[in-house]
Length: 453
Ligand SMILES: NC(=O)c1ccc[n+]([C@@H]2O[C@H](COP(=O)([O-])OP(=O)(O)OC[C@H]3O[C@@H](n4cnc5c(N)ncnc54)[C@H](O)[C@@H]3O)[C@@H](O)[C@H]2O)c1
Image 1 (cartoon, rainbow, N blue to C red):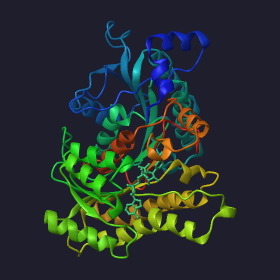
Image 2: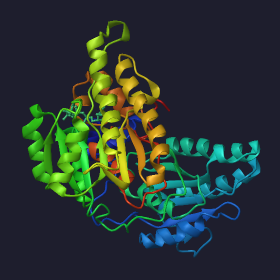
Image 3: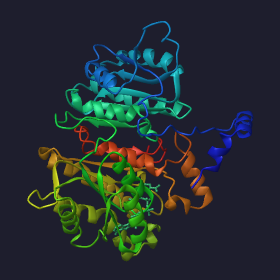
Image 4: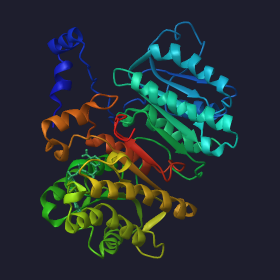
């Protein structure tokens, strides 16, 4: 569904009118296309104190063909537009160290180009014993969340908390958050653990040779996930209910994948998925994306047992049962070591929503699932994460009453709804083989929505 307001205020006359009337003007976001450079301009790289993560960050940026400039470098570069500001504040330990953050950001933000990126690197506060150190690191979250709300023209600000020794696991998140793949991820703090050494390079096809299953792939966000995983090189198995068979086949044809018509609430759903993987691909599964979901919205007082059960069965129980089967290492077609499990949650699962107690229960439950399961399977190098979309332009949101839809679109820092591809890009990032340090996390794709903020 098109966003007429965004189109209008970015047209010739509309732009002038919006400026005269002082109306907000959301910017069309820069989105990823194959072969596109990571950034639209150089990255200013700076640190607070001895900034230990820069030893990883700088080579990673150079490998990603990002032009790196440093504070105070060459007079020509000191005034040009920046594609990004990357600031390692992980060594900040006292409240006065935070001045170092302000001193870098204040002048640099003025130079940030449209759809630019601010990326702070910190040390996870919960790993620091001393209250002053934890307070200083937690303060970075306040800075990033505020800066994200201050930035204009589609620019975003996010924070990576290193929860390990700042090893190679940072490179994959760094690329994602700087690139256009993270267009609708704003104001977020993500933890990056030590990760493992395994993982492939990061060319245009990071998922080459991988087999992925996407549930609910017949339309909407699921179809976009299938397309993006396939674009990134994966062989995709598209799963949806038999009633959606025609559109499922159309998606599978588009992505050169296979179809599996299946109601995921079937008691043998996990077994059928594993059997399909083994039969069609003769190998194990690398990426399991639990995207299928339904809503049966009603105030809790009006919710009967049937509605309640159907939402929890599709959105939560099916995921738990399918995971149980796919994590059985002895089963043919089950998840390989080093595999990825990615669930679609929702900002409603974080904040709750009027009329959505069943849906919010299921989506909050998904968060509990990934947190517990990630710890259980860490020894096999399997990561388990969730994405929590905010307002995404799909058939689901197109059916909303116009008032609710307009509010949903605007109450975020980017002033617009996300697109299914934004959720898909976040999932593809979590699926990357060299993204070994991000696990047990919930990544919001919501343009920094005020819901659940
Ligand atoms: N659209 C949004 O703004 C938004 C926001 C937050 C979260 N989400 C979540 O994202 C996911 C995708 O949402 P969408 O907007 O694309 O929804 P959608 O309704 O357009 O698509 C969901 C797909 O899941 C399939 N499905 C439903 N029940 C199934 C079952 N039992 N077995 C197999 N397939 C089944 C449907 O047939 C459909 O193709 C859902 O989990 C949803 O809760 C969406």
